[in-house]
Image (cartoon, rainbow, N blue to C red; front, side):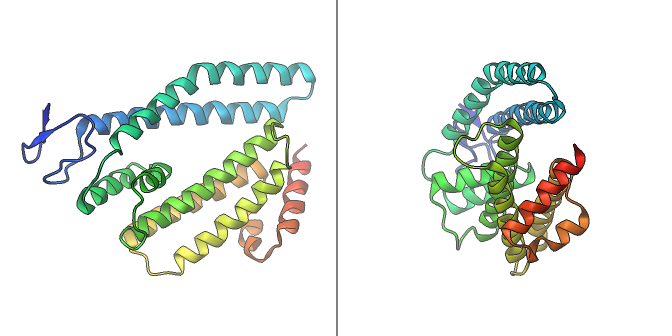
Length: 239
C-alpha cells in the first residue's frame, strides 16, 4: 500500500488519483508513460511500413514489407494490448468529479487525447460536466480515423470498401468538428490542444496525401468527391 505524496492518505496501486486530494498516483503515471512509449513504437513501425509500401515497385519488395509488419505485430502488439489492460484497471470503480477532472487534466497534459475518450466512455462521463475535454477527445478520435484509413489504403488491407474514400470523409469530418469547436466558447488553455491536434492533422495529410496549404484552406468548401479526386491527383503526381 502506498501513501499519497501530497496528503499522506493510503493509496492502492490501481487508484488513478488520491481519493482525498485528487493528486495523481505516481505508479499510474509510470504505467501511462510506458503505454505512451509503446503507442509511439507501434505508430513508428506503422509509418515505416507505409513509407516502404509507397516505395515498393515489385512484388518481392511488398512481400518483404509485409513480413516486417507481421514481425512488428508479433513483437509489439501483445505489449500494446497489455498496456491497455493497465489502463482498464485504473479506470474501474466510482470516482468523484474532482478525481475525474484531475485524471482528465493529467491525460491532457501528457497529450493522451485518445485515452481521454476511452476514460470518458468507461466512466459514462456527463458531457455537460466535462464538455471541453470531450470535445478535444472527439477531435482526436477523428484524427485517429484519418490515420487508420490512410494506413489501410497504403497497406491495401481493406476488403470491403475503398479506404481512401473513407480517409477523405474523415478529413472532412475532422475539419467540420474543428470549425464547430473553435466557433464555440472554449477556454484558451483547452483551445491550445485543439489547435495542436489540427496542426498535427494538417502536417499528416501534407506528408502522406500531399495536400498543399491551399488545398487545406479550401477543404471546408469541397464536396467529398472533389476532395477524393484532389487527393488521388496529388498521390499520382508523386508517382
